[in-house]
Image (cartoon, rainbow, N blue to C red):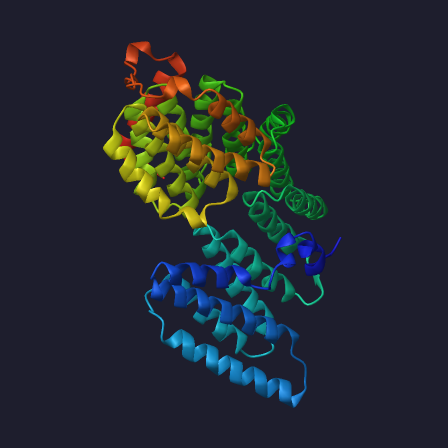
Length: 432
């Protein structure tokens, strides 16, 4: 089954807005904060997106060709004035070079440049912009997208929509990826699509069905060639265990995932999640070991910011107000780039921290913001969690935290085993 770019992106509701508006919104926000160079880089990205859009639409009319050439040179001139050392500038300049390449291979070269830029934007937490760029990449196929490429692109589109809490578009794209994987007999793609759909269910609060799908994927991916898929399924299964309150199972499953994975990006994400679980059971030294390994890695914006939020929460739990405020301010600088679930998590953790330090008014205000965001994005589990805290905030107020690190003898066997394994990995120089 061939897939067209129109089919793949029809369900993307970002089309309801001004085309490429995400770049303009970033430029405006940076300008308002006095960040001139980042604002100009964002504006340059907008100009490049418009240039590519015109290249994909242009016909043989001499006036159209002349207008395109003027736009090409104007965009090049604008980009030439931006700092060459900036990664995003290198991406946008490469796209402009691709637009002007020889016609015979232009679409393929342009497609590779656009997809690489989309991955960069995803890494930086700019999911709306990544979708815009990926949509342009899909249009370079002109007609139908071959099944192998359709599977990869559909997984990418689905993941970005899922990060933006767009559940229906995400599921549609995961279905396309699964079908393409079946047609090409690519078991890995089929399993990744099923993992994605399980994650959508988890985001919507349907934990039993999400767990059932993930356990099935784990059972079907035990072969060595599917090691990374197996590890990813284990990692996401551990998230379900977390939500179900099964801490020991979550920790054991995350450690199994870490040992299965070879992909550095995925290993880093699992290390961050493992650190969170270890912190929750009082294994603070092991948690800090995980967090340090993440923060010193080349992790994405999303992963590093999540770790920052977890450290912030840990410091409020142990009563370190200065450290809490330091990490809160650090996270605040990234607030405009946070996807919905992270933006809620940020406010949730800040609200609890304020309550722990006796600031009831500020705690309730920020928690109400979290509640409104959860309702807006239909994140049901987050809504009920924040609501429960708002209705039971009194126990947190003006209490000195008594959180203490767990002694090795007090740890559950599973936790002690994982902590020992992490120390061995760190001593051996194994990291993300």
